[in-house]
Image (cartoon, rainbow, N blue to C red; front, side):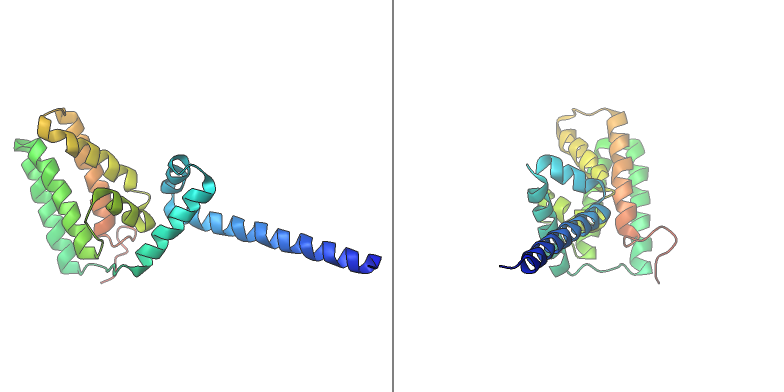
Length: 183
């Protein structure tokens, strides 16, 4: 084989390798941007970066198959009123109000088109569009699971309400910044 052909083969191999590295970097950046803090959490719990990225891509594919829809302005207003009622109930019965907040968030997820068959799947489905508020949901859910045995303080319950509110607002706003909702 001539020297010119050998050099050409090496150049092609190097260019293909560089293109692959660039493609992987772009794909990784896309996942980081889309999932926010959920990306790092997936890497930490997934065993490896490749396994975590494979899981996140699977979440994206599942999410693409969902019929996630925006709320009408009327529905947003009704949910906001229901949330106000839950907050008012917190004064008299904090533990019940936290359970009501969980139920309201679940109803809101269902109306938006998210499946609500189980907490772990809810988290995965929400992570695609709501990864930045997912830690709030996890924290609120953890407190809510402990309320039945009265193993929570009023301060923990108050914190759970704040956490539920973060996800609630994100879901209510159709994933847009507050004040930019489409009519």
